[in-house]
Length: 268
Image (cartoon, rainbow, N blue to C red; front, side, top):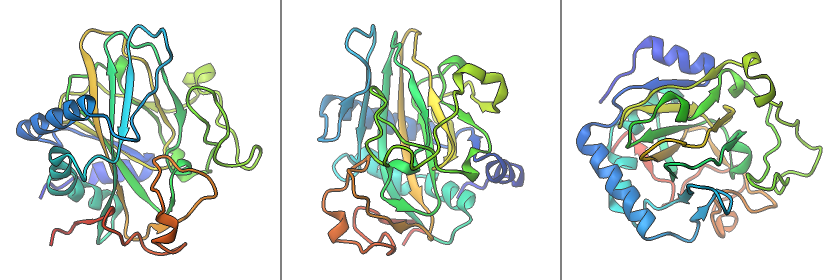
């Protein structure tokens, strides 16, 4: 088991984000790269191109592939990442929520808009994401996170390209501030990263990402985990990612006890 320092845990709890160097070892990075490349070659039903037509590059996403891609399953369930998540969440048990593959090819100009993850989800309660690149990432091409936004409030989720409010009714949640117009007014965290480094961040931490106007590509495996206190929260709208029929399989307010959300820490 990999242990975090007291300083790393305190940073995460204070800021809602912490960088962990070497969360995956070189062999695990190679496994992740193979898994990502398989996903790109064999898109799943939730795969989407998240860049606009005419973009010099391409931003591709895919979700929830661990049940059919052994490379991703191995890392999501059997690497040291679940144990790191357990320490940050301070929880006796950790469930896998889902995996997320994000690939920005070199030259991509499409920015990932600022957002929180949890308003798109079908869960209430605490969770953590691990954003793990398998390629070197310069600081200028890295995920960006606004420290201390994990304390709330929930902010209006919108579609990334059209900016539509498809989840919560207009006016029901506060709008995101215009971070780009006043970047100096926010505590933005971003890092130069090597393959296998991981940014852990709370489901409510506001984050976004620039394009990738560099050579090469930025392949990322993001793994999402739930604390023992997380509970099912069916929505009246299609969540992202969408779990078809889950509202009939787990009661509202119940523990996320389902084969799609296995307990990954402690290991059985």
